[in-house]
Length: 378
Image (cartoon, rainbow, N blue to C red):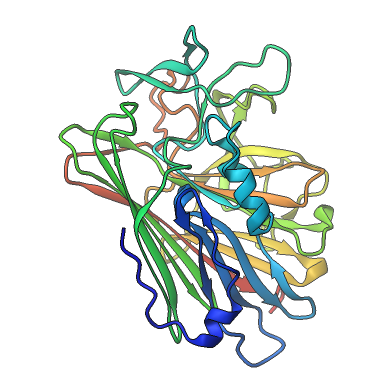
C-alpha cells in the first residue's frame, strides 16, 4: 500500500485530528485554511475512511453567523472507530448508518428467496442466479429479509494517496474488488477520489470491468446531511424530479413497479425555491430528472433559519434517480443521486429502464458529485 502526504504545511498538520486507523487503514483528513471574510461560507475539512469503503465520514464548514459546523451526521473518530469495527456487525451495515457510504454495484434493495441458513438472498440478476448478503429487513413482524446497498461499502481500499496542498487537498484509493467474493459477474476495480477546496468538495467514484464477462453496475453515495438550525419543518428541498416511485410501505420500502407524477402532491419539490419538509416522512426515490443547461442534476438543501444552503450537483449522465431519506424525528436528510431504481431486475418493472449500466470488459463508468455552500437569497 502506498501513501503520499507531500505538500502538508505544519499549520495544516496541527489542525488535523490525531491519527487513527479504522478498518486497517489510517483515516485521512483533508484540510483547508480559513480565508478572509466573515460573510462567505467555506469548506474547512473532510474526513475519509479508506479502511471502510472510502466513507466520506465528515465534512466541516464555516457558516457566517454560526461558525464551524459539521455538515454530516457522524460521531467523532474514537466513537466512529468503535461503531465501525464492532464485531457483532456481521454484514458491516454500520458503515451506511453514519457518514457517506459508497454504494455499488446495486444501491438500494434487491429481493429474493432467503437461503436455509438465513445468510443469503437467492435471486436472479440479468438472467443469472446470484447469492447476495441477506443484510437487511424492516422492523415490523414478518418483515422480508433482503439485500441492501451493494457489496463494497465496508471494504478496505488500497494505494491511498493524499495531499493537503496550498489551494487543493485530495485523497484517492483503489479497491481490487474481483468478483466481490463470488457474488457478482466479473472482476471489478473501484477507484474513489475526493477533492476539497474552500468553495467546493468533489467526489468521483469509478468502476472498471477488468474481467471477461459483462458487468451490471450502479453507483451511489449515502450521505446524511445535517440541518444547522435543528428545525426540520422549515428546511426546504429542491429536487428537479417529475416522478416518484411508489413503495409498498415505509418499513419494507419495496417498489411496487408504479411510478407516479409529483405534480399537485406533497412530494413536489420542483419550485425554484424548493418546498418545505414540514412533517412529511421521506424514504422515496425520485426520477424523471430534469437537467440544467450544463446537463447536470442539481439538488438543493436550504435551511432558511440558519441562512444555509447546500447545492449538490451531479454531472454523471447515468444518474437516473435521487433517493431521499428523512425521518420526521431526525435532524438530517440523506440525498443520494444514483444510477438505478430499487430492485432493478425485478419482474415488477416490465420494460422500464431501471438505470443499471452494463459494463463490457475493459469499460468503465463514473459517478460524480460536487458540493457547494451558498447563502439563500444571495
